[in-house]
Image 1 (cartoon, each protein chain N blue to C red):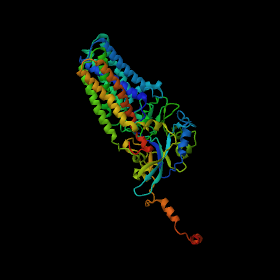
Image 2 (cartoon, helix red, strand yellow):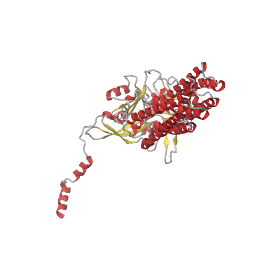
Image 3 (cartoon, rainbow over the protein chains, first blue to last red):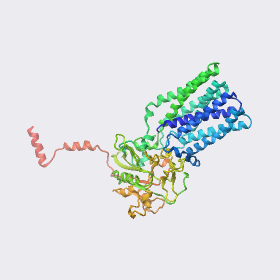
Image 4 (cartoon, helix red, strand yellow):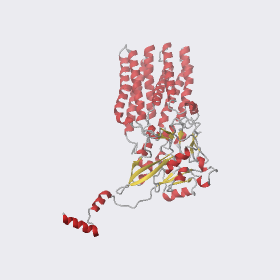
Length: 314
Length: 249
């Protein structure tokens, strides 16, 4: 599948933003985050900016952006529509909770309820994003049980690293947040490893034989393409660039996205000082690593329509 | 609403005969010709005369080599277009309601004024039946020539999809596959018509008829056999010439 940069930016940026909101909601309601005003202001501003950037980026690949508002209507059947509705609805508890925190300095009692609602809605939105892809039977690399856990855990991992960096730079990074972020990073690495192992096994449900129905006669080989030039379907769904470099790119994603942030955050727990620089470095490294991971998520995925065009398996 | 409308009793669709299709692309061209001036935005091409042309077409004809075990390969020409599925995944993923299936006749259509051009329906379709138009930036697909089949301004014999009308080998048939007594349904029954990728759970309305069984022959290397035959001794005048030339040297 063609990895549109707008979609890579959308899923990584909004994923990180919702991850930050989830931690702010849960740990803030539990009273485990610093209450220094600069932290609350910077954390909510960054989270909302990331979510907003992601949502705006997601409209860049549309043919008709001016009609994007219509996408809120089909929540009963479409995960893309559900994602849009959930994304907008999340702003309500975020506004209440963020306002209470930043303007009034309150996170307890009724404000904590808004915090938990913020976390719940943020994670629900990320789940909807994952199901846009997870619901597509035509792409076996997406239609499996690894995709939604990966989106959710990577959202929490990236949000945790960013929130740690904001806390370290504006107040003090609470060790609970650092430990939970380390846990999310480790879980994220495990889920991605499992995901990659899963998609490396070819999916035999659909083949050139079932696509053409000619398997009842014998082995099928594509002989003539229906068109001598490219077409939109092949440009969109016949993307093959990643296959050559998949191994290298996966290693880059693992090192930048997981190994370095794990090491940097681990050091901050063991050694005092440099916390700001280390968490900031972890955030930058993770951003690059997760962008590569998300690019691969699209570029490595094969669509069953390619079976008509000479692929034997997906 | 992009929820599917329930089961439509009438299921208009195509039956495509892979036995008689000769791969001439007449259906492809007539489809483009009719639909670029018919329902919705034109089917545009970009860079049509340049080095890298691309354009929206609603019907594509592949050719496959099929090799039965131990027998000679055969060529099958294979038209591919929207199958107007009963469980159309392209309809349910649409976030705007632009993509829909009609209860009245089962045709899957796109309301181009509502389409935001997100492309998700094309991702959801296993058959590559939807192509984004590069000019109008909306999704194009087979309409089953909805502007022909009910068009009383056309002579009755023209009230069928352009591809069916154009086919010179009668490899394409149009009718109501929801009616078990219709000509197309009886054809599907008689010839063992099948679905494409049934494992995708889309329940296509369009059916494909398999190529009729070929005369079973041992797989042979025809090329080598032909060359070997040429080395046999000819008879008659050529035989005399052959022998005479042998004697000369």
